[in-house]
Length: 456
Image: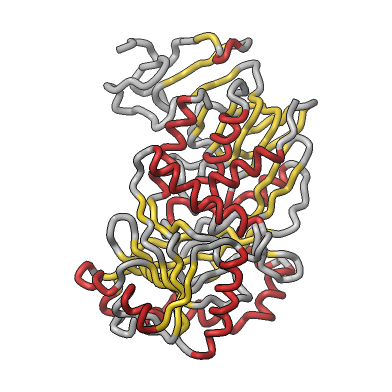
């Protein structure tokens, strides 16, 4: 153990032979009095990350956002340019804290998305690359497949449209009769269904933990508790001012990649950009089936979604831990990170309510919004939606579990953005809309971003 007081200076040559020094500490506050390279196992105040303070040298790349898209992008950059310096900034105390850590863990096939769109292309490829990554690194996953079911004759044309999209996108999908569907899911009710064989499940937090491990091995600097307060341009560099518990308050970077999820539009505006859409948060609430009722669902069961919305409807999902989750709905969140109905942020809510696109959306789809709110307030109503898929499910079978918040981009004309949006600038790149299936597509999104970066 190194016996060094908090007031001591403990400096080492900077990484990669650059000029300047790096000051590395083992805990955020130095309350233990330790300081040194790497972790101190005997330090009970040990931080989750080593904090590096670069004094004179800008990073070649700075990635804002420590969700699965930001981490995958940083890894793709490190693989493409192994000699470049990389920093990843995450405002929370853990990686994959928000959208990534609160989703349903589905490996999507790409069946729903418009042929030729980024979602269609990157999700189809991502469905394979995420599985290959899990196999290579021995992470648990399962390709259990899923059913998309039409519960009435009125839904069959929409089911057929999904099938045709699936064929155009190269998805492994087959039509099945109601009897064939019950061979896969004995308790399902439908008139016709699609069986998507390549759909799977995984723990995306575990995937992110492996991304972090690989980034550390490649020499990237990873900062937790690093909220970006302001960004200014100085010559050919970005100067980032940070708040939070990180020891580092300012750092510089030559090229910035914005993967800030729920705050991506605000980060873009800090650079003087005008994104084509605003992030409006939608909370998705889940229930879990009681353990004794898990037998009702063997894989994944989805309804035919409303083609006007990018949401897939309330469905059943087998999780990687064996539990069965039901949901999510989609209700307006009064806070960008509002996981409870009572979470309110006046700035976030004010931005939504003063955005013309929001009221155009309300005018057009207000009835659907009210239905979602009613389903959020009423467990019985939520159960009724699920009973269309499995009639045996009752409200008593449902246990409230986690909620997630979707960073959904909304255009000024009131249309919900259905594809990924990537804005390209000379010294920055911004991922403006990357909700589901971004986790499935994350490795491919990282590759796509790298293909668009022009550096000397």
